[in-house]
Length: 142
Image 1 (cartoon, one colour):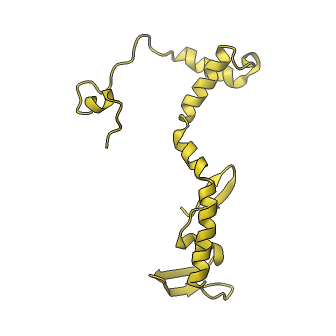
Image 2 (cartoon, one colour):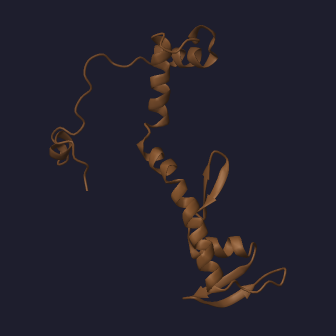
Image 3 (tube, helix red, strand yellow):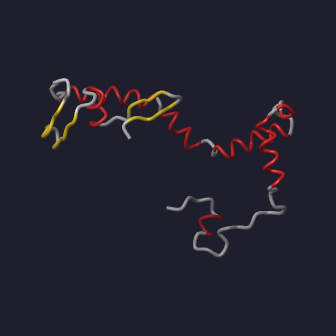
């Protein structure tokens, strides 16, 4: 993956490959270390110099660093299904108004009513397994 999408915008993931693709779009090449062993550019452009490539990677790194918050948020946010469940319960409890006219709320309510959550506490899925110890200790398995 050479680019990452965020809010409809693509930003580069810093690498030699990304730099070359940005500096010489549509070129076909093969590198051995820092030497181009194959090069074709349909518009006759020469390969970029290693200085150009390094400079482009530095530019890409500045952009990539800026969007670090986005990548961290993505892993920190609850899953979309959990977010939607929170939204549903906030609407159901009147914290967020509009459930009376919401087709989304009506569709989710229909499914929740048709497939209700079982009563009682959920079973411990790790009980009696080798993973039970780390599960109960709040540690992430390695």
